[in-house]
Length: 189
Image 1 (cartoon, rainbow, N blue to C red):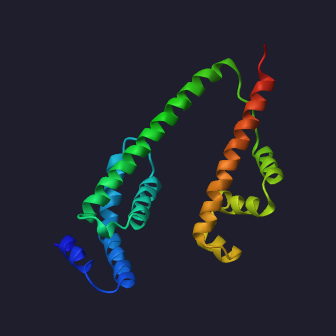
Image 2: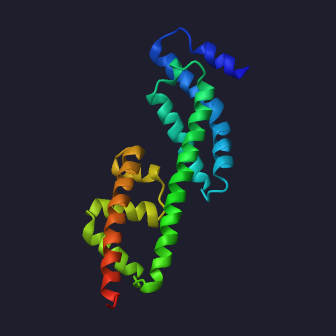
């Protein structure tokens, strides 16, 4: 019955406010359901509840981008898209798991280098800008919420989140190179 009221509210009225209200109603109506669906789909993949929340947020973001209001059955579209996102997540993490197993089996030939937390922090501080280093330290180590960081920096939470994702990507490549170089030095030919 709620589905019908959402579909009826979609027709008529001013475009901007009606659409936003309709999307908000859709979000409020289906967020918990999609979250439960994502949790059930991801339960055996080792995903966290945060991953399920991220998937549902991505589904609603895509719904806004794709103008879901034009779809003949928006709730079905949401369920199908959430299911597809979950399956893509599982596939991607299965590939990563296989890579990790392959890497672990190859580690038998050499000892992984010992890297202390101080070494990691020194490398990060030298390779990242002062603002990026502060941002990563605040969010990842000190566990300061995005809202607090946002109020301190004047940037939006979304801008900070995107910047953190970019810094993490930069750090990943940096530490892969560092790990490879340290491992290469320890190998005996």
